[in-house]
Image 1 (tube, helix red, strand yellow):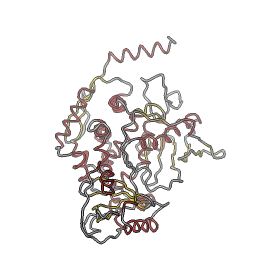
Image 2: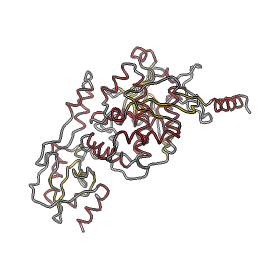
Image 3: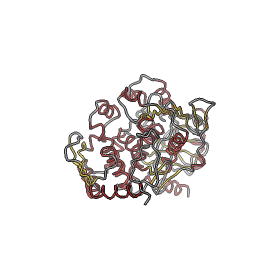
Image 4: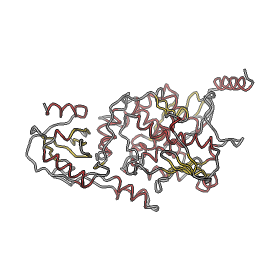
Length: 471
């Protein structure tokens, strides 16, 4: 019966049970200590991103199998070759090297010796009763939407200062935006973690961060950003602070732009806040050797699917994705067709954050287009490669549990396909939806790439005119 339960628990990930005799011991160093990595990174203000790799632990070679795996014995005598990832007093998570599947089971199913060994590891190495970093294993369907309860997002001012606090954020209002606008910004910031948690993905939300520690947001004037060559805002990987440029949100009448529910044709400008707070929440994606397109694509996906403050729509994402990509190039204009000259997917999917940032720092148009391409790729993997993003979910589970990213990519994302075949699949998807993708050695914007739908523009102006006249 217990052997049946074991197979049932791991059926979705294809676990194999092995018989044999091995000495049972715990390899406490095989568990990547993400907290210590993030602590070092946070404290090293002058640390270059290309040196982060040396801080990351490597589980290879720490056991007889050379990959951190060992044999675990169950109370009925059956055995399993697996890598222990995390545990508490009742459950443990394992990854099976042969299938790269991750699963969780009750410690009651293990032999007394293994069970006591894990209890000792949790006692000696655990934080708040948890050793290692358990993955949020999810199997539910992709949600249609998610929104936060506006009444449950308190905002409190500290004395008469420019310091404010919400449930999860300390906000410094250096730009002096009014309280109504500050509430909208806070609402958006507070919604990001909830939206990310609603997705059936094992995202490492706030790994290494004390749950009682509020994250920091600074709203500043554009003068500082102009000096840095930036416009909208950024997340500082060294301090963990999100900096928001208030001037990028202000219109000519000096009023902060707010979402106008009755004006869907109006460009909304809060997407930069969603993008940067997503980075702040999922910082571990960068520190754990993930290629840049994953973290940047996810941040763009959240920004694109925000329909209104703290309200995310995850259906018909091709519409929101297309609008998000086009508005940064042509603003409110309605695009009939657009040719996108993007880099080959093998290059994009192998690009680390250092190379990604080089394009941005150089002011190269390729730095702008790589965000667009990453968003298109993320949307493909989570909505079209599988309707609930199962392959992408298993890819994240593998990498976050210690599988080298190139290996996890080949197994779960490529699945025997060539990059040329993947490019064709993404091209065929977007061709009828308004984007014609041309893959090149490097991304570029060329003359004639954008065709405006002038008939739709005329209709939009007519509607706006009637609304202004009160019709």
